[in-house]
Length: 298
Ligand code: GUN
Image 1 (cartoon, protein in one colour):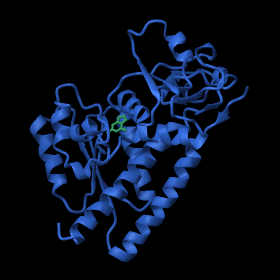
Image 2 (cartoon, rainbow, N blue to C red; image 1 turned 180 degrees about the vertical axis):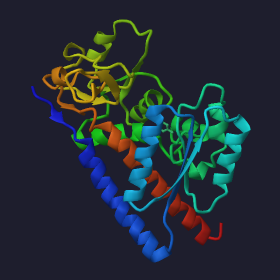
Image 3 (tube, helix red, strand yellow; image 1 turned 90 degrees about the horizontal axis):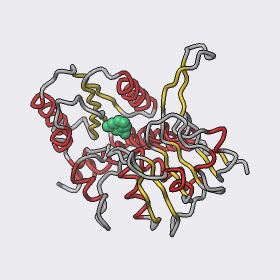
Image 4 (tube, rainbow, N blue to C red; image 1 turned 90 degrees about the vertical axis):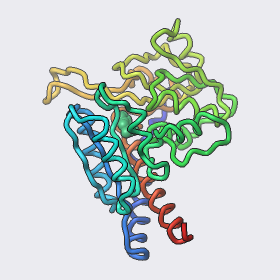
């Protein structure tokens, strides 16, 4: 079997085009554009790169982007004060605090300072709490997990009664994606560093989500023939053959697994573009909701 390759860049570009149309309409008819504030603390190179990509994409779809870069040694109060100030700024409809924050900061308290209706990353404790319960409708769903589900839908995966295995239990991907799969009536197993006989557990999966940050870990014999495999990993590995001396790979050994799976995302070019498209979508929605609220006299 050779897997259908799920082109995340293509799906994301369709979403971006729709957002660009909607922001132009908003600017034309309502006289304003959605605004996203990004808060980056410290100079972790990957985080800087992610934030830069998010800001560039905003500009390309007509969303205003306001960047706040703070030094690594910033204090808790300073960051919470900034987030609260952005929360009160009417030009800003969405606030993204890039994670992880430096270790001395209380991440939950910072996320708690983001007003719920501007929590376009979906990481506010109330939004995450609602996502983790039945029928509680969070205002926003975290962007990478939402992108994973959208790609599975695009590929034609059936969720109802499927065995889904999630490799990784991070707050950003593993745990929220497990909740989204449960809400779609999949039977979900979440694996982590203490899981015994990992390949055998993964082989049970009709839907396999790899989000552990271990380059090329998932091999062909970890995958059930005909499974849908989503690779969230993005890892830089040394490659003396390449011009730069390194290349990016996922958590899944793409060349091996494409011979077994029914459908598979590449990395790069799979989930990554969907994360940013989801953020743009949430920012547009935040702006639309805030405008409706204003017009209804709220
Ligand atoms: N760090 C890695 N992924 C994400 C994300 O989607 N949002 C934020 N805020 N931080 C991240």
